[in-house]
Image (cartoon, rainbow, N blue to C red; front, top):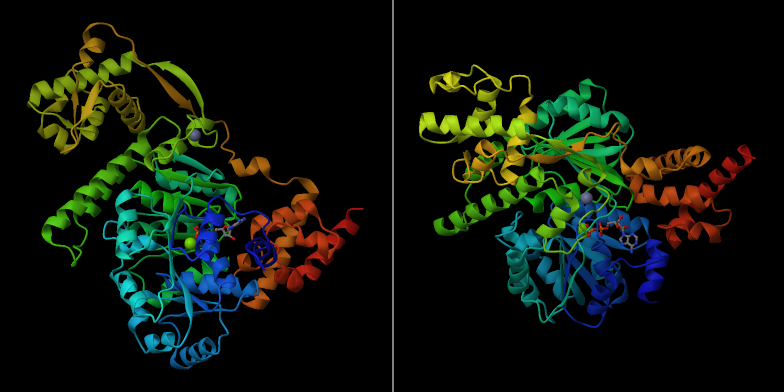
Length: 610
Ligand code: ADP
Ligand code: MG
Ligand code: ZN
């Protein structure tokens, strides 16, 4: 059998995605490989297909228990003999897995890195012929990555301990140079086939919103999504609690996940989400690595994450099956302070000396700056992210908040003069600059303690913009900064005038900005391509059938068929098994198991609509 046949028969897809073929061919030719692809890019298949074609067994090293369980479940559903070895197995289950393993019953075994030198695993593996070791989420090996796992450092020892060195493959979605170098060096990859694919995920609609009230905005965003599955990320445990409560109070089937919850509750909540018993997961960044749930149709960030890497990874959990999905970030300036606080107070990594510690912190702050830039940019959001990952991109993507928004030119000379002169007056009075918030509050004529203490209520600019909203003022300040009239000191966030400000203040220079017109109605991209009329009805029926089958089999619904597959099915409306196999995502085994049921349902639909 060859890789193309496997792709079609096991996984039910007709075409490889970019990078997959090269990485698979590399392994089959006996070369080490290093695959860097975005989340949802299809890395699993790059090691699963070679595993099926190579003699002996493939070990997949993977950092998270949920990820292993998920992937093994999906493989089994596709008819592939696979198993996992981690701390969730009890003694008897472990013995059974080992026995089957020795009997050559598995082609793919997922192993937690801690297990590599634990509980006799080594002595079992000695008796096997391991042809290929695949290291998933390989960035965990790097201290510079965001998910450093010391246990990943054991992988090299383990590989060295094998009687014959297997082919080694590493896979990650982290594209920074430093992490790439670390992975290659620490795993001692031998002249690997490197493949960095594009980072674009065109099916993701990206947006940043600056709401006056985040809770209200969140509810507004969720209003049209009652039946959709999604994740809401928050920066802190406390926020997770309050947002989860808010959503439950408004009748959403929401659940929560953060490191402060007991282990059992965490895994219970996670399962509720994976099995669609709960549709919204409210979580900190502790949730999600290795969550392969393919039908997540939105990821909303209630707070700004600490880096573009983290943001894109978390947002990338939407739309993994290729269906249209939305990624929205709710931003305000408080998020900057929270993120800075989290970075400056993050617990020290014991494996680093103080100097390295400080370097990590500086890197984190630099990454945060880039993230803030994303929230404030008036340019194409997708372009911003691709630019960050060093990838070329068109100026306009057509599927982000910026590109889809309407723009209008607005003359803001008057507002600009008010803001700039307020900044000047504050500086003249105090002898130093102050932060955005204080400027904004002075302009609004507020009576804060801090403001009164500094005597800012006596300035002639006090209260000049008392009818303008805080967000609006802050946006104007941002624009003036982007246009080069203001500058924020990176040390203390104080905002001061630049020399060009004089042009506006004293020489009558006009200031115009392109503002994004709030769209009349925020229709997500997904709405446009949705099936209409009877097809949509059929899709609902097919989903219902899938959910019933999933419940019977005790697996999450997407393990049976993804939403993208059902959508294709509703479009193609196959009549025969041969036609059924042509639906994207329908492999041989799944066709054999579920084909009849789905064909019957489609026939029934046809009869009803005759
Ligand atoms: P990654 O590990 O890179 O984040 P996954 O391996 O979990 O991504 O794959 C994401 C989704 O893409 C899965 O639902 C998978 O079935 C699907 N997929 C992978 N390869 C293909 C392909 N060639 N054609 C269509 N879908 C694919
Ligand atoms: Mg993966
Ligand atoms: Zn865009």
